[in-house]
Image 1 (spheres, helix red, strand yellow):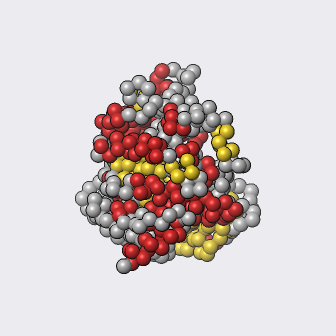
Image 2: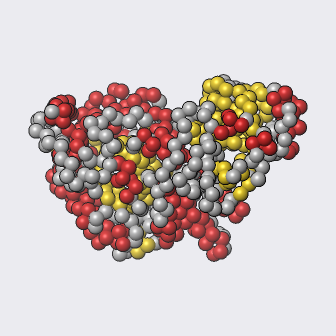
Image 3: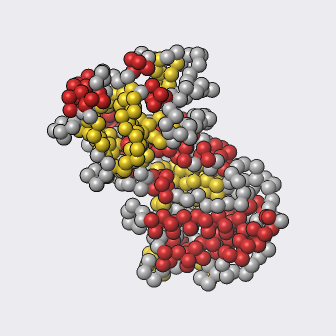
Amino acid sequence: MKHKLYLLMAAMMTSAMPVLAAAEPDETGMTMDAQTWCKSVKAGWNLGNSLESAGGSWNNSDWTWYDVWQPDRNKWETCWGNPVTTEAMIKAVKEAGFNAIRIPARWEGHIIDYDQMTIDPQWMARVKEVVDYAIGQDMLVVLNTHHESWLENNPYYQYQEKINDRLSKIWTQIATTFADYDDHLAFAGINEVQVNWAQPTAENQAVQNSYNQTFVDAVRATGGKNYYRNLAVQTYSCNAYYGLNGLVVPTDVVEGRLIVEFHYYDPYEYCGSAQYYYWGKEYASYGATPSSNENTMKNLLTQAQQKWWQKGLGVLIGEYGVSNHFDATASDDVQKVQLENQEYWYKTFVSAVRENGFAAFVWDNNAFGNGTEKFGIFKRNGEMHVDNPYALRGIIEGSGQEYVEPQPGGDDPADDWYSKVGKTLWSGSGYMAWGDGLQLPIPASEFEGTEADDLLVLYYDIDGAAGYSMVQFFDGNWSSNPQFVYEGTTDFQFNFRDITGQFSGAQITPLVIPAATVPTLQSTGLMIQGFGATLTKVVLVDVSEAGLREISSDRHEEVLYDLMGRPLDQAPASGLFIRNGRKVVF
């Protein structure tokens, strides 16, 4: 009765469309919940710049198309330079090692009745044909609405009702068309909602959240297998940091069937714009690298793990990639290292994604060469020849990483090892915004007895909506910058997104105090300030008292403990742990 009542009410609420009797919920063939589905995606690929292409330009003022140079909109699939998608293409992707495909699809250009938002049956049949190519290869599939400019460019209250009405009507039709498909097929509601890629306002976030709820309600209202289908909802602009603070997970009538989607081209100056030729700590000796590195990547995925995965949601990275680029003036040997660096990025990312259980789909737009936005892997115009073997190798090697069951932190951020063995210098809740926020002075008296290699431990929450997050250290007179060490890097300031801390409610990062900094702390104290994060505690740990001076990296069979004192069932891939009273770094 509960199912019938919900379906009737949802159908009545979707729009002014004729109310069709929803099918009874049907769980046949729908055994995978969201997390099982995501873990099953070994390697995902995007059919980029095909079904979402357009043969005209969109006027966002009056919501019409203009300069339409391809009047047959059912031929828009090839308007961005790609050939008609064939079953042989999808088979080649499968044979290369991918077992999942994301199919971006544009619907706005194919509406024949705007009152009901009726999709052209010929276009619907074409999208279905491509989906069937992938299902026929036993691949997992994500189908979305993509480049719906009327929706993606207008996250404002004044358009909210109109957009949600259109979105509901479109998804009712898509869901009905694919109603009999089993759990190989998942839906993703929208794509990158944004306004000039600027930081979202509260209004932008609220409207985006309403789109997600409308999408879920519309699909569920069709009943049948759609009642249990895995559905992906998006963070604002598919930016993970905006989602960590701003995403409101939709209410749903069935448990465990929602997935949170974001995209990852980080750092963009390496992945997209090709400003840097090297990325990561492993390649820093070869040339300039952006500050965003392996730590940034793993830190973000850990936050997504705790924010969403550990609450029963799936996590999907709908797009990721590195534009193929190298220094054309450099020697062949140098270019080879730069291309191998791209392979390293792919392997590092996909491995970290798989370790967390997330699904990820590489963006392949069939664009080749050397420079910006060259994300092509398979040459669709050339019998699917692999033109970027570095990308493919990195993805397939990384996809071999097995899922590692997470070790959740305690609910209470204070219930941690550092607090138990260290001295709390300050606790509270102070938002850092340079001179307009927390500027925390810690007197010199607090550092009496401090020695080199002791730890200054910061507890904080990153503001996902902030453009960046940073902490800086000064002496009490603001005349110098005391240096600290994190994983071999010595500096007076750190980007919070680039340092991987221990997680227990709040994020926790231990910084090593070098010998040169000790006299400054003991004579003038320390001032802490920053931006884009809330500082909640500062702890000083005397490592000699904690018995953690010796460092070991041996992986042997004795019991390993996390910093909360809990035994681990299996060896972790990375992090700081304790074994036999010694610090162990993986």
